[in-house]
Length: 115
Image (tube, rainbow, N blue to C red):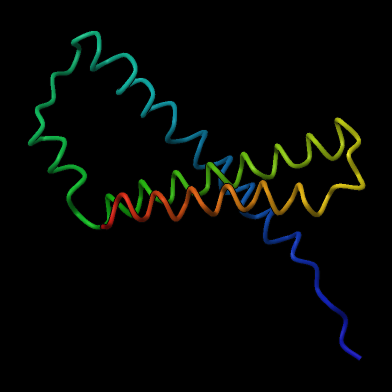
């Protein structure tokens, strides 16, 4: 008789990857788009920004950053509701909603970036 394997390690790996990616790339993106461009430290043109995002691998990197960050959020939010608010009876619906939102935003980012 074969034992059913839990899917939990998969979501923990997405959580860890999302935390790593978020901590490495999001501060740089926030400084560039939130400080450097509005304060005039950098003045990129539309053509320059388009040339940065045009290659498929740049769009793929943006999608990975968005996707892993969202799965990091989903896992953290799920366990905040589960452990912090003691919503143990609602674990399955909370997990479905949190990971569903993360998956939906991943699909939306893929649609926006590649279509």
